[in-house]
Each structure stands twice: as C-alpha cells, then as structure tokens.
Length: 334
Image (tube, rainbow, N blue to C red; front, side, top):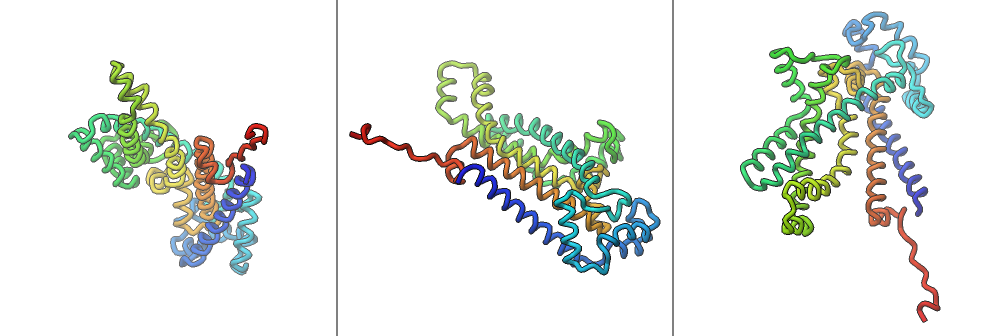
C-alpha cells in the first residue's frame, strides 16, 4: 500500500470517527432534559446575551430545526451544514452563525495554547535537565515533587488560585477579558503548569538515557568542557523525543481550555462551548465539539506521518513505506 492509499485510508477513518462523534453528541443532547426554549423561559432569558426577545430568536431557527421536525432530519440537516460550512444560526448568540463564531474564536484558543506550550517548555527543559544532572539527590526529588504537584492540580483550580492571589488580593492582573497583555498572563500560566510537569518528566528521563550513551562518556573522557558536552551533545539529543509530545499536547490544550476560558471569560472556543452547553445551544455545541474532535484527529495524523518520515520502520509497519526487494540479476549471482 502506497502513501496515497495510506493517506486515503486514514482520511476515511477520520471521517467515520467524526460521524460517530456527531451521532453520540447529538444523541446526548436529545436525551438531556429541557431545550433552549425551556431554559430561556425558566431563566427569563438570563442565559441569552440579548436577554429579551426569546421567541423572536427562536423563530429564526424554527425553519431549520423546528420542534415538529423529526430528530433524524434535524441531524442530517446539521451535518449537511457541516459539510458545506453553513451550520446555521446560534440559538444563544442571536444574529451570529456558528461557523462565524468558530472562525473568530479558534485563533484565540490557538494563541492561548501556543503561548502555554512555549511557557511550559521554558519551565520544563531547565527543570528536567537540572533534575537529571542531580539524579536521586534532594534537588532531584524536590524538582520532581513540584512538577508532579503541578500535574496533579487541574488547570481550573490553578486558575481560581491565580485569580484570588493576583487579582483579588494583589490587584496586579485583570480577571477577565482578552484585550491586552495583562489579560493573557494568568490564563497562560494556569494552562502551562500541567503540561510543564509532563514535559519536565520527559526531559529528565530522556536526559538520563542520553547521559549513559557512549559518545557522551567519550566526550567527557577526552577532556571536553562539561557544560559544552551537556548543552551541545546531551541536551540536543535529549530534546528529540519532545517533538513527538508537543504536537498532541498542543492539540489537547486547544481543545481543553473550556474551564480556563470560562473562568477568565476569554472569547475562545472553550468559552463558547461552555456557554452553549449551559444554554442547550445545539448548533453551537455540536459545531464546537466536532471542531475539537477534528483538531485532535488531524494533529494525531500529522504526528503519525512525522513518525513515519523520521523512522522507516514505522513506514514499513504502516504499509506505506515498505521498500521493494532489490532484484538481483543472474549474472551477478553466477
């Protein structure tokens, strides 16, 4: 099987996975008690930005997702809109189409995730190297304890702690918004501590393995400067495994910022997904969930392709890079 056939096979599996995610999400929304109209009437429109005119907002969507329309037809109508990038109006955000909300919110979540990964790397690389160079010492145990603590605490709990300390008590940073650099600091820190702990453990483990390699021992035995050997040889090769970790981690951050964006009221995909779930905004919630799933699947596909390009053995196992056996002529064998 060639590369094109392999890519087509993976694309087909990706499409089937998205269909499965859409069916499960739509089914769960149908099983959930209440709908957007019921919540609006009970809360007197409190879950809507407009706050009034609930019946007027719903009239726009009745032609597309009417209460009398069969559930199967509603699902097929929405999926047709997904394919044509026309998912219709949002229930909660009157006058805004779902695809427009996703287009405007995704760059915010992507920026937040990229900055969080960059900060996580700035924390993880020095911490991992420091712990590896002092293996089994108090410094090593202390560093690993701190990174494990950061990994154990959920990001929304870290975000709440940062708001209490740096906003309510010290007043250094705002607790909501996405307009200036001051608004970025706290959410980026809240999102980066967990990934920093994971990456630090990867760096430490990889660094310890590299330090035992013969070329590092030989370089030190030849009298090479300790710092030069560590930074130029050991550290450079130790960071290679991070390439395969950062990709999925970035995708996880892009799709896992729901609570942090909701706490800081950042207009990203996570914030809109949280508000859509609270108000039973079916088109917006379906759109954000499918977009989250698409990001994760595409990044995983890119990581698998990267594995294959870096390691021919993986290409052979995947069936898209198996080299053909070389033909030997009878004259050469004679």
